[in-house]
Length: 298
Image (tube, rainbow, N blue to C red; front, side, top):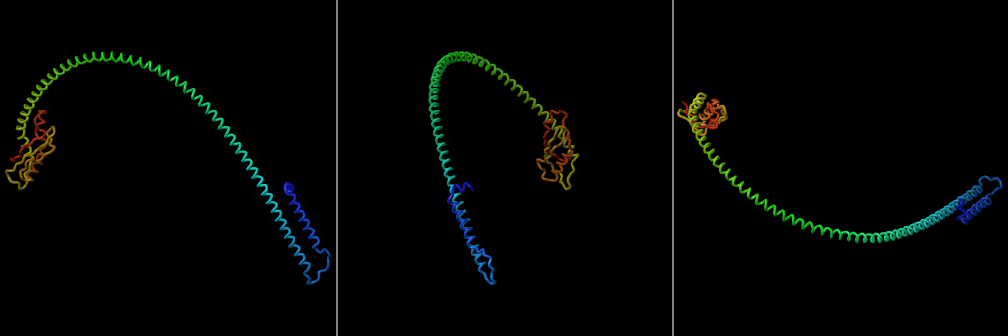
């Protein structure tokens, strides 16, 4: 409060004078004589109401004046703070710019020194590389001569080995041809012997087959039942597939008698007659794996 008095003495003085005037007005406007109030007289009450209205008005004016003073003070304080803040920001920005400028100058100097150092290093590296390149070229030339000599020696050795290899290959090829000729003669002899053996086996198989067909025919005949109404004189060719032991795996008429019932009865009879008789020699089975024979009843 005292700070407000110091900053706005004139406003405080006006407020004090207003309060004094209000007090004097109240003192002189009131009737302090205790006269008797006649019945039906309203003057004292009216005088009191008018005085209170003025008091309220003066009080309102006082509050408005105080509010105005406080608002003015607050605005002044805000303006003062704003200016102080603007000043601080200005100084801070100036300090920031100064530091940035100093930093740029420092970096520029450092960059200048770095470039000078880089240039010195670059020249030193180039000189180093030049010497290294000269040394490499010298060594490369020596290596080139060494390789050329080694290549000449290598080619001479390869030529020597090539001739030796050619001689060995020639002898190996001659030996290979000799062995191939001997193998061809052996194979031709074996093929001839196999052909003769096969022809002999085939002849034996044909002989055995001609011997065993009547046995097979008889066994099938024993298992066959003539279909009702089947005419006499019918026959058919049936193909039979066997496995070792004579077991029948399939039986199929390949040349029909013209009578479907007759053909089916023969197929059934072959299956019922399994196993069929075969030669005792196992080597003969391959000729009996699949046989065809004509079935003629009776």
